[in-house]
Length: 169
Ligand SMILES: [Zn+2]
Figure (cartoon, rainbow, N blue to C red):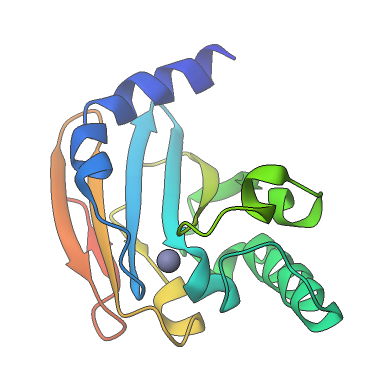
């Protein structure tokens, strides 16, 4: 619990920019925070890019798209790659809300973002993080990455042809 709370504090240092990010299809956000050996990578992505729709799945086909995407998200390497000194320790996402009946989504015509969070345990601080998600989602063109680590902070715009965040030594 303490670790989670610390991550929230760290992420709130950059959350003003995060909140300012508009919901634009084809564009996502990647928030990176370090808490000692643990590195958190949180994607905020339009549901339209993950699923092709932003409402509750109505047809069998849409329900299958949700479970296909959950499988993809749980395949960590397809989303984010780090050096071998980092081991994935947990994956969480807000897609589950699409599977369970949820009034908010069912009757909402608003846009929906999906949050996907990966936590890695890193014996050595990684020198890079590759957002491989940019090559596995056809419609995603851009991911604005922002990071705060123990000794640096920065931001970079990632695209399918330039999808690597490099952390300064
Ligand atoms: Zn939308």
